[in-house]
Length: 631
Image (cartoon, rainbow, N blue to C red; front, side, top):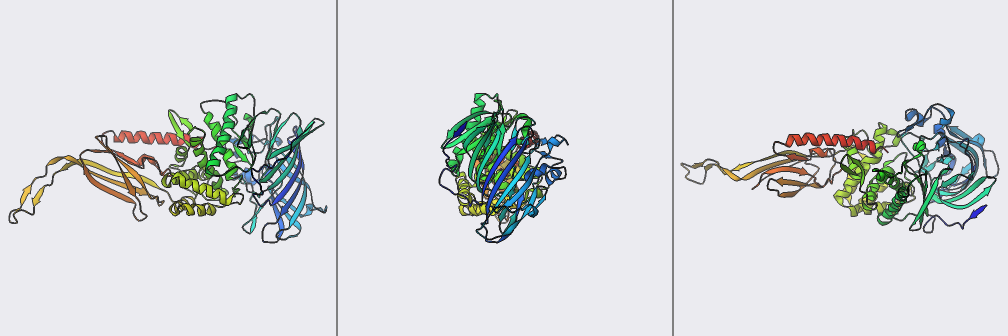
């Protein structure tokens, strides 16, 4: 049977959008019994640099799972990602990608030029490649999927998630090749190009992939699925005979959900709505999605290692999408992964070296989408408390040991926890702080300007800061210090007193000089107040509001203007009512504040009890949130 439709460009307006460094054709067949892919690939790679090149490095990501001494397995405690780990030393838990033949356009054998070193390889080109010239390389390769625990693999049954599965060229960037090993604390970096891929699997298997399905051809119990994708930096696919399907359209984008039955209709709709809400928010605040498809893939419960991951035009959800009190988690993860199609799929920053540019910005915008578009501002619950995404990221950041700047290469963080904190929660908290201090309108201008200036261009942290500087130089300076240094900030209501004021007492020096009049001070009906505020840490913000609460119920708001050369502020004044509380930053503008628990002072006999309760609550919430945000 032949099912064919007219091919339409996956871009929503005429391209090309990127340099299209390569044109890649792949013909792949999946053996669903052995979970092995046999493939042929033709790569036409163009030298878009100004240098003549003599070699080309490649990533062989699946070889990270080939044996127990690879960089990934050694750095990940024997093979682990999040809460998923390699199940054992059986052959089924290992995988690889092996090039079995390699030639140029003339058929010359290039295998002698191919030097493999675990998950990277280097090819000596058959001839120097001048700027603007292209080289054609023909590969035959075999990809053995491991039992999935780290993104790529199978579940030992019908689920096959085929990611990072083919020889992928490094990126010639800033005058040199960028081709890092597959580190445990990193994801990927690749050039944009066009893919023309034919995927063959047994006909009972439902297939999803990057790009647009052009045609399906059935023969001898197998079906070949022909996909094409333009201006993307990766190509992934999935095959499972148990998938259910649902779809919707949003502004010309086909959103397809491949789910694990049975799944109730409300949960299906929840996923489709989450993806649509993400596009709606980005179209309004950042820019339009240039592709015409988005596929959501629900892995089965025994393939959790494949969940919660992003690829161009295809993402994986969490494994449990059933309606529950925590259904917002299912929506939140899908919003997060679809959002990656902007901050990584379209921007394509270097996740090896600057992971925050994708994960951190995406974690920030995810919180805004939950609150503004999806109508679900609370990401999770802790007892009776509803915790929003910005505050959740603050709790994860608060009190964390500061070991590395946010902007640190992923393999150089002190710990895996430091990588997670500095890639996700801390940069999200930095951006949320900037939004609350300088305003959402300026933050939107930064995000939109960054997207418009650097989409499809591999931007860096400096590029992001350069856009911020065009919007507000003070905000850009704050972001620079918060991202690139170890500077911290902790605002404190340091001291507070409120006492009955006495009348003026003592000698009247304007009376008889020979015998000045003396009057004893007397208590009046007014109150004398003194408040000292303290800024600990080097990180600067322009200032914050301070609420002064009086016994008569009146609340006075003052602005604490901060300067780099003064870390404290002292106010002394009188009123007719006792001062009972001081609250620094009542709007929680400085979400990066290291400890909100010391932002207030309370007078009276209950102050110590209240302080102990606040400390206990913060510690409990911080522990719970850190676990939940470890996704």
